[in-house]
Length: 349
Ligand code: CA
Image (cartoon, rainbow, N blue to C red; front, top):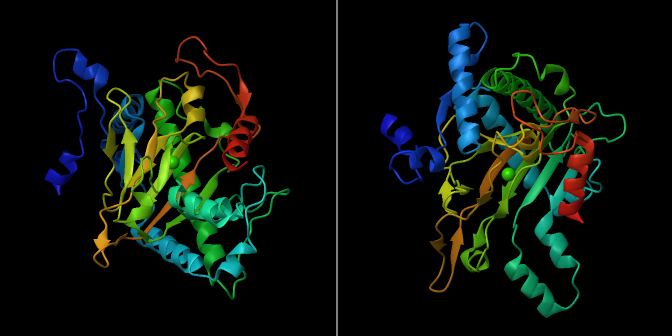
């Protein structure tokens, strides 16, 4: 196990003199148990420094002993799979409709395709549709304006209660990792506390269906094209299929973030990067398809993949302006809501 873990420490840089520091790109595995309640302040500080160093360097870490028990994660995956197996007409009734809500079911590939009417055009679109996946988006359930789009209990037993529990577990973890970031930036440990406590997050269940390899083979094709995330942090739970890759900005190369059992991939989003005046890095990443298995002499099929992403945000009303200890502000202040809704509207328009 140790050798495997060590192998994920990737040096993308030229290993000579100072150049190594400037161009290294590591996705380290960080044991979060040393930051949990009861840890000594020295242990907490060390872990906080490790996390902030990695977020400055690559914007990505693996977190182990993060406090969300393995059976809890497995159960969320199994309820997610049950949901995606529901008939299309059941899922379509729960459709995502508005970026301010950002809740509900999204079948991106199908929406793109059905906007066209000409058969050849549909075929062309289908062949190059860059994001072949379906998702279910869930927000805080007590929002007075935007309700979640829950399936009926008889269609998806325990789906709602499972996802609400998981949402809360992820919220708690986000709060802890933000405490670590505060400490690592030499701020008060509770600096972010009242700025991130309203659960303005987005739980996204993702299903990438098994797909014929030829549909993914074109130039620039992937299960999810290169993008950065919008909020503070993303917590990514992946199955063993993998495919996530982060882009080393120094070399332009995509570096695999292979699944490691019982860890969460945590990456910095654009809003935290902006908040920190670019001290913490929001890194482009994508999902590529794994090697395909031949199904006949002409065609091969890739395995399906499931993942769960928890997109963490500050409170929607929070003003995001350059944090202390992060240099002279490069960006004007913006509210979380202005920023996130603007980005979502551009994505789905
Ligand atoms: Ca992402």
